[in-house]
Length: 199
Image 1 (cartoon, helix red, strand yellow):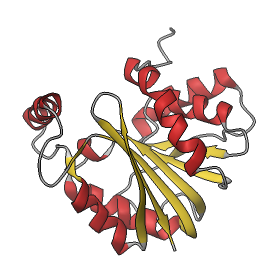
Image 2 (cartoon, rainbow, N blue to C red):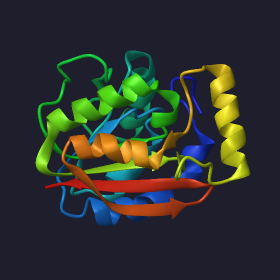
Image 3 (cartoon, helix red, strand yellow):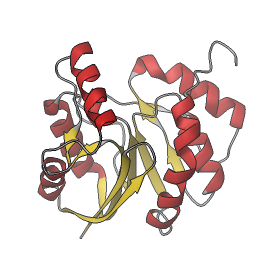
């Protein structure tokens, strides 16, 4: 693996279970905005497996070289150049999309940034838009596993603003943007892929 191309073993492990969810959730979608594309691994895998989608990657500036490296190697026709997107900065570099995907982002952002994320998604997501978010969630204020509790402690020790978010609190942010939960999939390693739809 060259130095420009970052690699996440977790992405390799979780991509198939997530793909199974997205194939259904995005079956009638055309333009997907991925927020927090990270290494870019998810993008190239999902775009290759779902060629009917235009998969628009985005992340903070410091992560874009790695995303570009993955996209360049894959050379797919449905993955335009990544966008620099900081959820707290407006306007976003996207005007409209009919689907949004984000993986492993909510727990590394501050809660105020999570609120900004949902506000921004509300502005760019179409009237019947679909949102899918993958990662760990607490249910009714409780950790779903001992490993998630340990992960949360590690997150907060590294940066106090981080932490696993409660599903109901995230649902409340979604509801403010006219999004209702339509699916909640339990996936391996105590993660979930939750899907909301507008309208």
